[in-house]
Length: 87
Image 1 (tube, rainbow, N blue to C red):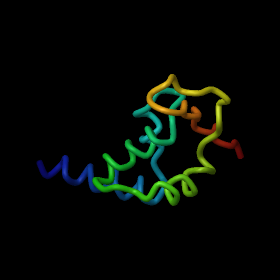
Image 2: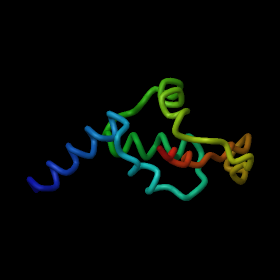
Image 3: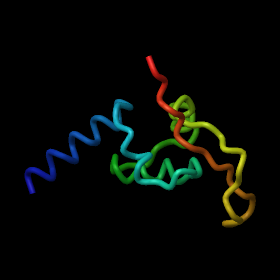
Image 4: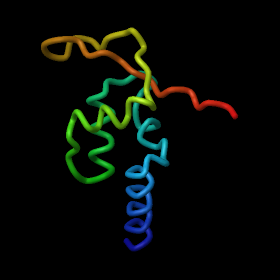
């Protein structure tokens, strides 16, 4: 219990600070922004404002040019994690 609680607290801190790429590893290679936001919300244990979330994550993702299959009204644009820039 205590080890798991400490690990979850640490993960939440790193995700909140934008230091952990873990949320991307919990998704397929191409994903919708809604799927990415849902992963963040599960990890953080709270809902996030859609517009603010998308602004914050915009530098970390790129459009694929593909769309998700019809899962409702309009097909959602698919994204992928941007490749890490080499120094």
